[in-house]
Amino acid sequence: MTWADTLLLLPELIAATGASILLIVPVLGGRARGHMAKWAMLALMAVTALAVIGSTYAVAGVQQTPTFRAMFAVDAFSVFFKLLFVVVIALVTLLSEDFLSEERYSTWEYYSLLAFALCGMMFMASGVSLITIYIGLELLALSSYILAGYYKNHEESTEAAMKYFILGTVSSAILLYGISLIYGVCGSMRLSTIAAALSTMLSNDALMFGIMLLAAGLCFKIAAVPFHVWTPDVYVGAPTPISAFLSTGSKAAAFAVFARVFYVAFPAFHLDWSNVLAAIAALSMIVGNLAAITQTNVKRMLAYSSISHAGYSLLGIIAMNEMGLRGILIYTMVYVFANLGIWATILMLRRHAYAGESVEDFRGLHKRAPFAAFSMVVFLLSLGGIPPTAGFIGKYFLFAAAVQAGFGWLAIVAVVMSAVSMFYYLRLVVAMYLEEGSGAETIYSPSLRFVTALSLTVTLVVGFIPELPIRQVIESSSHLVGRVVQR
Image 1 (cartoon, rainbow, N blue to C red):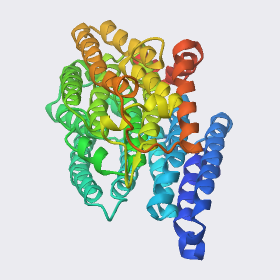
Image 2: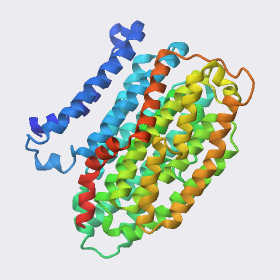
Image 3: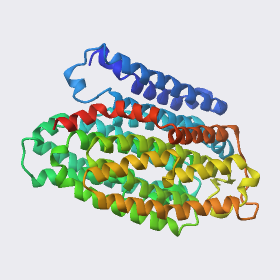
Image 4: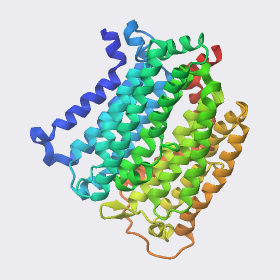
């Protein structure tokens, strides 16, 4: 590596260095200053974001070494996701403030783990080699396992962490085995080299088995059926801010990898794997939405909802066209902000270690916190894809991409399941506006207000004025789209 390569790695280096410093501060006597950890973390996120933006200008003026270029890419696609990851971690930091102060858990180690997770996610977004992607994914996964069990004195949290860890290690082994088969057939880990090898290759059973194992490992990360069984228990047992992180940042990172790997490396074998992913997408939408209808626990309901949204997002992978890739980017963005807004409202309804989990906790919320109730309605409508919210724009791109690619039946399933999802989303609206009752205790801190307001602004602005984000998404996806078109 040269200094030029190091310059392009600057955001990841800053995140890793900051995470290490946060980890050793308590050892150096800073544990008593836990209230400073939040500001240190937010400062780290600001510096990391500036480094990400700076890397876009640096890449045009530096000469990368061939080895570095074969493993790591700084392009518009990776920058889009990196900035989204930084925003997610910053907002999760704000969501965690009251949780950490009330439960008296160590703040420095908590934020350090979030920073390490961010580093892993950024490597996933920039990885153009399967080994780089795998290392980033494991860094994210190991941090997530510990964060899921951060309520170490609570049985539910420990159980969630153990389930997540055991199933996660199995999925990582499956993914790694798939990578080894792909490497054995193609002789390379680099995505572009794999694509070149596949373009001159006829159908190969070992290769297809490897692709399916790789897809299975990634489907676990996005919680798609039948690799979804960990999701409800982990979302319920983990600290609520971590549930918010798992449903937004972790899922967005997995889709960044899914899009880059399948759009860059496997378009030549699209007909061979698309039908399998189509079945997984349909099952995810059906199982996720139907299971969510029966839930009275809001966190469990959101877990099954996230399973269905994994199915919607898979439409963009299956379509393998411009509309599909752009749909993945814009849908990931709008899904992240809508979900963070919902989790902020859940955290507002706190009940000791865990936030408001029951639908009954939302009764009469419009009287106690009218802004939070209105925002919650907008977020739920966005998840349901109702105009003029941002969710409608995202689903339009994904559904149109599926129709263009000849998967009209899958688009019909998606539309029907979106209608079904409104049943359990509106259940919360009814509880907030039409049912009487005091509900859970409401503690609406400035941090929660800020997260809610920012998420609401993004959700409405993208819904009413979609031109700007769509233009940015087109620019961010043009690099990968060009590769597909050339083939």
